[in-house]
Every structure is written in structure tokens, then in C-alpha cells.
Length: 446
Image (cartoon, rainbow, N blue to C red; front, side, top):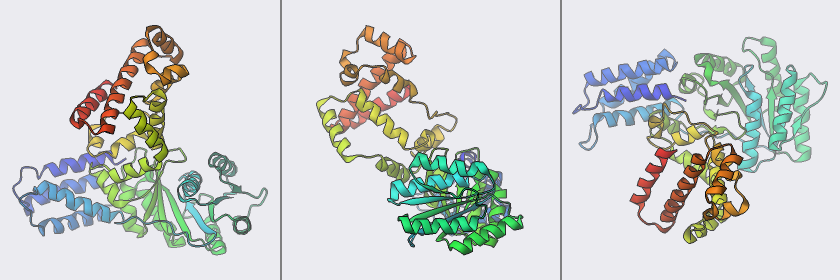
């Protein structure tokens, strides 16, 4: 996500490195390179030009403090303008009615059905809502079945009417069902359509009129670039939607849609899809995304993800184990599972400042922990609880049972021992410098 743009912008800022001050000449050269980077990212030409013009005005009007280098000042200005370009501030969905109705719209294949499931899951698990999903895509038989499967996965009911081919009547009946059974959010999944398809556009307009939704979300595949922006404009002219959802932002996307769409339709991006799993959905924060584009990481989002998996009681138990040096492989496995629940590993690591650039050419597999899990899974209960029991013969058995070799088992046990020492240092607040050095050494061994 945005990797090429991040790299290009970084090179652009280097043009100002070593410069004593900002001048019209060196700013012009830098902005020319930034404009090219934006165009290569599939940002609309007019938007790219306005963006660099705005940056130039800000840059030429700034007095560079002696403690701030010109390149650093330019990064700050570009960051602020990027955040402004993408909307400036986070905009949440408005769910004030009971039940609140959310209507999905978008092209065929944009990911509306999958997003409906992700949104229902987010509202249920993170906001304590009681959602009902509604299958109004009556033209694609698999769409109804897909929504049912997603509903089973996340424990959210799906309203369907077999044989009914009238989405307006289905939507109306679903809202009545929600009122009678206490569902407080109704998510209506509609059929994919082309903006030029007058009949289909009239149909979704009729659904809108019938249920008077609190929110209309336009779901768009971010990999379609400027086509996504043009389609959004057409849909907005007909539906006047409330917000945009960008799906497949984890794919091979140049980012042009995310950077352009807010300026074209003047509607906020509210969510971004970052994977296939039901929890791979993030609310969109323009300022945080600007940080990530410029390689500054996103510590706030990282902390939020960690807090979602944080269990205060478990943390107290872990603290006691660390203090007594009884941290074992079962505890180690719990920590791995918490990390995995935070989402795509490369995205999580990319939220750490500086790590995005450092790992830009490194593939981080979501199954990176599978060998560790297999090795621990081959241990007996006593071996997990008391790692000191694991002698040479036990190591051979564990290697055979986990489909690994003795060297990999030895490496894990050694790394586990080093991890336990470092975690004990943290719990006691001792020798942080030594701990950081140990972490670096351990990282080289993975």
C-alpha cells in the first residue's frame, strides 16, 4: 500500500537535503518531483497540480528555524497537505436512529458483500451493536449465499426472502423485522451495478427512498485507480452518498483513489479494507495515513490494535510469571496469538516508525509463526509448562512431530530463553539498553 509513492516522495525530499534554506529554485525542483510521484500513483493531474501549488505557497511563506532543516520543513508541509487532501479529520458513520439503516452501493465486484460482513462484525465486536444484514442482491444467486456464510462466521443474522425479486420490498420488510426483534443496525447489501445502467440506478434510488437510510456508503475497489474516482462521481450525482469505502487497499494499489476521491466527490473516506479476513477493516484517519505514506509509521493505530487484544487480568498474571521467571511456552504461544489477532503482519510492522522503509523489499508472511506453533504444539503439557525438561531426546521427538528439524527446535528454545530474559528485564525496569541490544540480535536470527 503506497510503497512506490512513499519511496518517490522520500527521494524528492532528498533534493533539499544539504540546502541551507528554502528558495524558489530548490522548492520548484522538489515539487516537480513530488508532482511526478503523485501522477505515477494515478492521482488526477489537476489534483496533483493544485496539491503542489498549495505546498509551494506554504513552503515559500515559512521561515525556517535554525533547528529545522529545509527538508524537514518540506516533509511537515507535505504531510499536512496530504492529510488535508484526504479529508483532514476522521469522519465516523452516523448511527442515530433505532434501527439505524446503512445502504451499500457500488460497482459489481467492488467488495460490497464482504464489506457488509466486516462492518457488521466491527459494529458487533467493537461497538456493542446488534446488527442485521439484509440480502438485497437478488440478481447474483451466490451473493445471498455469500452473505449467509459471512453471517454464520461472525454470528450476525441475515434477512432473506426466497423467491422475492423486489429489493425495495425486501429492504422494507427487513427494517420492520429489525424493529420487532430489537436489531439496532440494518446493513443492506445491494446488487452491483454500472453507473450508466439506468434501470439499476433507479432501483437503488427507490430502495433509498423507501428506507431513508442514515448512511449511504459507496464501496469501491481501490485497485481501479482513477476509474474508481470517476465512478464515485457518477454514483454521488445520483445517490448523494455519505461516505466512501476503499476495499483491497492491501493489494498492488498505487493509492491514487485514496488521494483523489475526497477532492472529487467532497465526501469522506470512512473505511478501508486491508485483507480478506472479517477483522481486516480499519476506520480511515487521513492524518495517520499521511504519516504512513511518508514513512513515519502509525503508532496511534498500532497502540489501538494492541489495546483491542489487551486483557488486564492476563497482563497481571504475565507480570507475576515474569517476576518469578516462570514464563513458559504456553504463555509464549498466547503472546503470538495476540500479535496475529492485530492483523496483517506487514501492515502491523509498517506502523512502527522507520520499519516500513527498512522492510520495503522484505516479504512478511502471515504464516511466519506457523513453524513456532507447530514446534510448541508437538511438546507435551509438562514440556510447555517446564521448558527445562526438554533434553536432547525430547528435542528429536519434538522435531519429528512438528515436521521440522533439530536445528529449528534448538533455535526456538534458545530464542525463547533470550525472550524470557528480556521480558523479565522489562518487568523489572532494568538494563533497557542491554535489552534493546538483545532484541536486535534476536531479530537477526529469525
